[in-house]
Length: 282
Image (cartoon, rainbow, N blue to C red; front, side, top):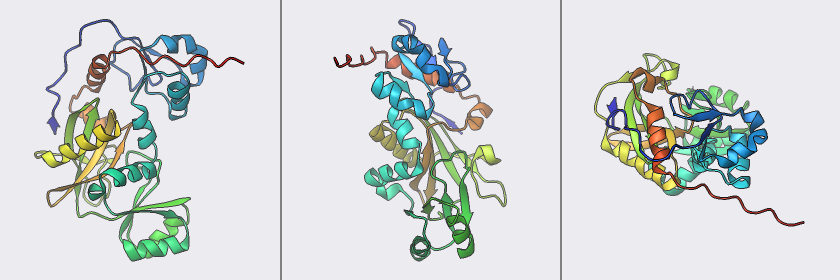
């Protein structure tokens, strides 16, 4: 693993931030974060309007908090909207970084579409449920029969080529920088490289090409909190996906202080929140 943050960052000076969190576990260690239950958020509207930042809302809260109330959110709205659905994420990546996206087909779940997958990608291939994380909903389809059976249970087909890899790189991005990066290796006989599913953290240097790709993608798309999964094929980086609310098992295991990096970023952005528009007179 590579720790790129220089260790535990110092606390920034200046005034205290007024922070509200909707997820006390992900905000653990962030000083001064006041917990509001997501389902009770509108009852706390005066407090929300006074806050500098609202942290880790549920996805269903994002539009009302950002567009209606004009609040600053962390993670960013772009992080939520693009990270929520692999289909939307992949289309954005294909629009800006097509050479770094594995061959991917997004099709209606019909027998004709399955024939297309067989013609263009063949088997084995990888099927993914568009809204999933930590390796859940990701399957290796080894045969035509497995592909057809899996497709029959899906509302839409999201299928990728199988890259010749046995490990990938998790790059953790917070704010505007790479916080840390490490190899993830599947255990023998297993397909998933997710630490949460039993993969181990491997040794070895992290290629700069992987870090440069993540930096370019996150910066271009306005992502400020995500775990990016990068595959290296003969020295060339492919971005598999990113998860806005990623697993932290690998970070905890190596003593990486995610809360400090988040707090440092919020303090660096210390600016007045956008005031909501005045109500329209009846």
